Image (cartoon, rainbow, N blue to C red):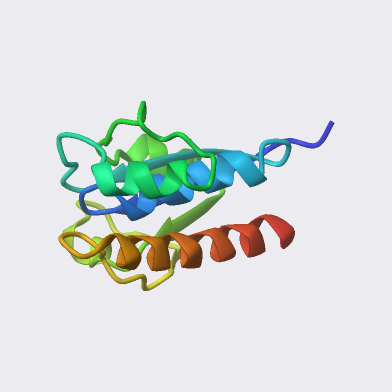
Length: 132
């Protein structure tokens, strides 16, 4: 059996985009990857709008909790992906070999904006899984 790739999705708050990416990666890559997500300044909880729009896709991230990025998480990851929120500037350690997806933060915006970002994340995750 092939060893699973370890993917780490990171952003500042780890409450929305990185949580959605982790949810999609777990769903689409369950036989290929293990995933985690973390933030440089994690929020207290996962964003409720993100939870709701993910439920529309049949993926429940309501039990996820924002986590602090650690050197251990970075060292264990085969693939590190930033959501596009200035993580490189706020991370306490340099992020080497980090791909930045450059996604807009939907925080404080409409449900439609959350859906738009969710759909972009879904396509990026599917492409990532296909290319492993």
